Length: 225
Ligand SMILES: *Cc1c(COP(=O)(O)O)cnc(C)c1O
Image 1 (cartoon, helix red, strand yellow):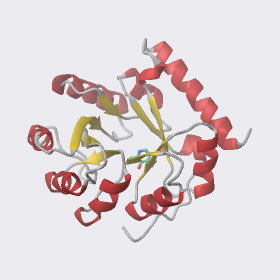
Image 2 (image 1 turned 180 degrees about the vertical axis):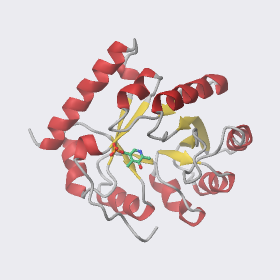
Image 3 (image 1 turned 120 degrees about the vertical axis):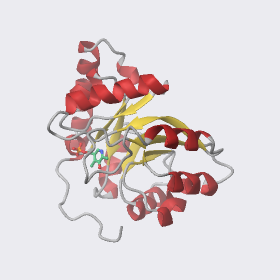
Image 4 (image 1 turned 135 degrees about the vertical axis):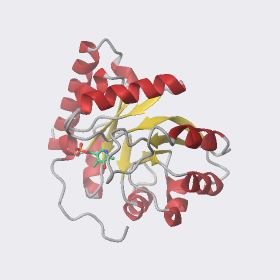
């Protein structure tokens, strides 16, 4: 087994254990492989070990990878900040966007979604700890963005995403769970390599795992964003 396939098997096992411990079905939890900054060969390795959902943070990198791996039937998720002048690439290549936090971007994604593709599945990113430096809407801004997205023909609102502060992730995950219940939405994108179990305990349905799967990232990400 390669490292990546070994890691993948181990993560599936951890998901299994966490689900069992918290009385959930592991089949309700999707493992999203966060492949930002990783070379194409790493994605291929994960793909060959059975991984189908990949998450990218940078538009240019997403475009390169989606084009290079276009024949594999990968399901691409966009999880990084989206500038409004980069929406077309996301609308054309992705199946999911987790990081939606502006009406302007939502409108452009809907307008630019190619007609032959199903609606883009989206999660609103919530800045659940109200951190100044973080993307995402506050819970006060949430109702307006939810109703704006629900009006857009080529977007399908599935749920919410959060990146809680390291200080108290459990409380933040629970607050996210309450929000999903309040809005009657099924998808909760939360939990990364370091806090996956707490996220699963609070009802996460998509865990976004990078480091635990691919190993540490090179420090330098893209500068052209
Ligand atoms: C990089 C990233 C991840 C993965 O983080 P790891 O700690 O490497 O698992 C998850 N979600 C988002 C939004 C990211 O940017």
